[in-house]
Image (cartoon, rainbow, N blue to C red; front, side, top):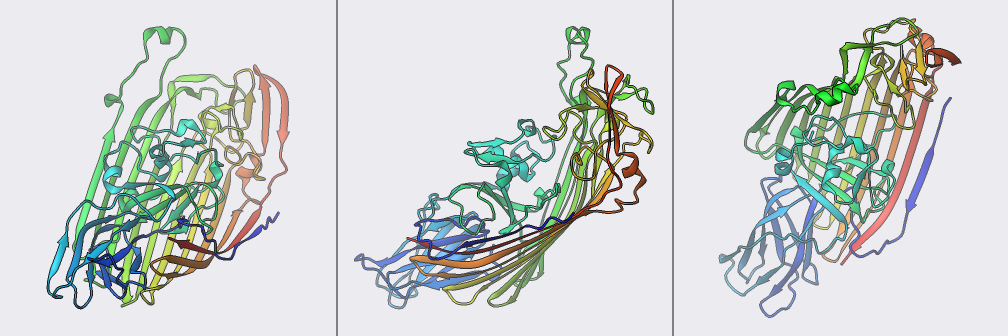
Length: 557
């Protein structure tokens, strides 16, 4: 079975929507107007933005006939803005703090004087973006460091007042629940949430569980309204901005540990007398991470590398291994409480290279492995709402998972900006049997017990593959993007296109004996057989999906 889907989305013409936002913008801007002391606008003023966040140190433009300017494609960080023109004193504005997708409004009034005379203006950094009306929440590195969460992108919905998780059980306070699920804002479809890394859409189909390493994240911006034609979906957009390194060496390390002795327990004798023998409790939790960045060649080539090991293991309330494993019946082994063993390990490297005065190239590579082991013990919504003994659930092992991104930017003039991005993602998912399960064990669902036990069951057709038969799946996705922007003080016109190609399939599906034996399931009611389901196995599939998007839009004051 080959499923092909091509979507051509063309948003053409000049979408003259005042204050439209670039939904996938991975950079910030500084804009404003320059006047003299009489209030007359001043064209031809050189405006420079300097920051340690810029590899080239300084970015400059010239004001237009209306005295307006705009400097785009700036990295998040602290900036000093300088205004200079012959015959007038130089004005310097310090402490301009930029976050992703934010446009800081910085105006200047120049007075007649010597060029050597510099007027330094002090004051609070602009907090209100007067040029965009996109609704967004920016979460910086300092906030991420102190909040008790997993620091994984699926959990950032908790910062948005109107956000609702598709599955409310994913809410996590304390950081031990792992990756959160999809969420919606103002009733939007959860599946329309866009995950963007450095402006590139990273929504990989087919259920990958790639996690962005918090050690390499500079900030996360969640946009909930005002999305542009550049976005590949209409839901909330998460823009993840990575760290660049710098001209000085710096590093960090963090660790978090806990265990049963540090966890509270509200299980009373009264509850035990009513049959509740154990509650949800921590078995083990550890989160270790470190990062290092600095120059390979000052002002030319920077590096940043980050590494993280995260593991969370919890005992499951009222769930036990099967004392009669290998038979068609279930008896709880009260001495073996079921526990989860979720983990992920990530190693990544980012290089930022000023290849030429006006050409910057950024390369990022991450490789990781993780496991949801075992998966969906308490059911999985509409896929399989039945609770499961651990023997009936799979070990979802993703090894390896990789993500490679290359970005290029070229501010050809002080008005014309070219951008290009290419990303390649991939993973191999192994749906494995639990250690106590043999290849000939059969899955049984006892409706009287509301419990599935024995082994995995399901078909490789995808009917039940999250909880179902043993499989080895591969998935790859390539995403490319080209864009050109023409920027004046009053307009920011942008055109470009996106292309995405996704491939998914099963490895060894025609010969895997585990897949063949896993294609049968019994249904009991209080240990009395009532039905049997047999799937036609072995079975394999390959799917391909392509998306093409072309856009043109204008941001005008």
